[in-house]
Length: 372
Ligand SMILES: Cc1ncc(COP(=O)(O)O)c(C=O)c1O
Image 1: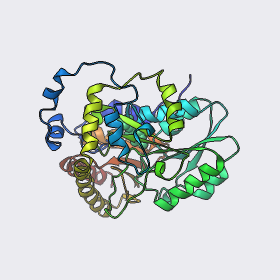
Image 2: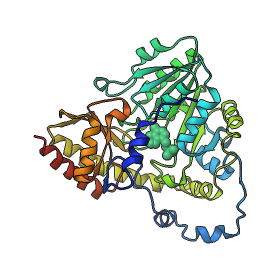
Image 3: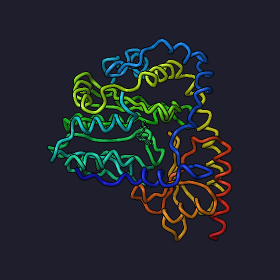
């Protein structure tokens, strides 16, 4: 089976473990176990688990976890949820369950590469819907409608969006849902960064609460800051969930029981965890905004949601060269736009600890000054 190299993963893997200041990460500062248990008031958690037998556990994710996850939506019940190995496992399962050779799959671009490369590897005709900077990195619905053909099986979007931090608002999301419905296609909306709004007035419903054709995926890695659990989920109507479950039997059996219990605890205390995450991203977004205002070589469409932003730079240097030199000279890690097929850009993650962001930006400034 042929598949394109997942460029961002290869670049992260090459550098992330040794770098001093990591501004490439997409997660909101992951918890230590101690911090997490203390925030949720469950310091005795592991003591309480001592009597639990380590079996396979529940196949589709415990009822407790699926009940908690259903509460994150308006119209979803535990039967509409399937737990997976991260949002990456959830997305993969959706492609594996529905995409066949010769299907048309329309995906936004740039994007988290999994969202178009897996469908291509399964033999689909992948059409890319370009997101443009002059349209605030948002999908153009007229262009989307033009791409639809009578073989369109799946339309793929990501809201909030990696790598730009753009946010599809309710009206636009409803229009995209209508296009999928009219085409008789599924709409996969990767909502891994859901809820991380920079402006507290913002709110966008989940696509699953807007359309019967929607399949949404979620993650414990980003807003929940529990990346090490490696859990995510799919939410959709019961027919779609059943199809995903049939395919999942060949890849998963079940996820880890302890991870499942920790994840259920997290969703139960989602309010507290979101308050922590929002504080981090809003503080850091202000710092990043101020930095960019004062940095003539960098411009951006300010990210509206999530924990990442896409920066345009004005230097005669490829994005990969820039990032590798920045790592070697200044111990600071950004992701080259080339990993997203977008030369002249850099992705920055601002979900890290504030002191890491400040130190990294200060070194980035020195680095840019040395090129003046
Ligand atoms: C858009 C998007 N989807 C999915 C994932 C994978 O997330 P997880 O850690 O839940 O597997 C990522 C991780 O960066 C992402 O950015």
